[in-house]
Length: 295
Image 1 (tube, rainbow, N blue to C red):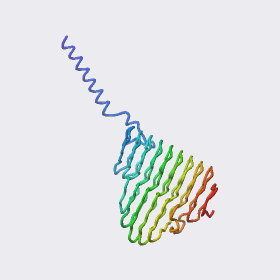
Image 2: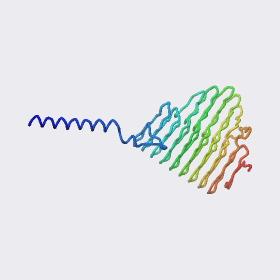
Image 3: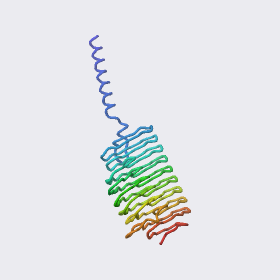
Image 4: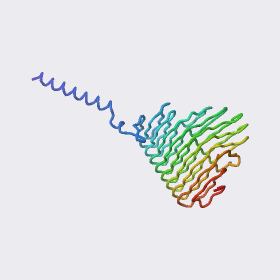
């Protein structure tokens, strides 16, 4: 009888060991998380997380909480999740002489998010810099701040700088959003000139009363000139009372368009819209009050 009881206990113990090992080695919860239809490779928690991707292509899901997510290198897909999140397609700060292009897809989803295609702060001390990233950013619900490239950039260059193309798609979604096609502040101290190559950005404000800058809000040039053969933006304010600037709000008197540079297509959409089309030959529709629009 004792031998039989021992045998049953042993079998039960073995069964429990098998169940436990298989349950925890393959979490069902992680397997169900996706972003833009792709299985997640990095998953946050429902708390406030700081998440950094790898140098390769990542699929990052932040879940709940107020997260800070950096995609780092590679062509990443990022779903911030609920909460007021901060997302960088690359990293918070960049100080390169050459910036390789990475094509990221960023989804703010719920909450009032800060979504940046590349870097929050970009410092280019010397030499030639080339930026060529094509990002897709969807703010989703909430009052979001979206920048296709950066928030603040400083540049002190001897001889000049060449900034390459970046064909971004920026969607404000619901809420009163602030959208920068390229960046918020660009401060330049240069001997020579800054040349911007092609970069065609598509911006849709969506619902809400949005403020949209086709390229940069504040452009400060200490010495030299700013020559652009890009910044051909397509802007749709969507519903709401929007304020739209085709190129630059402050400092655009130093911009010299060449070719078809700065030729924007601006549609205010529904609502009472106003703004400034900026340099170039621009086409404007459904704008109740706008300056510097030729067509």
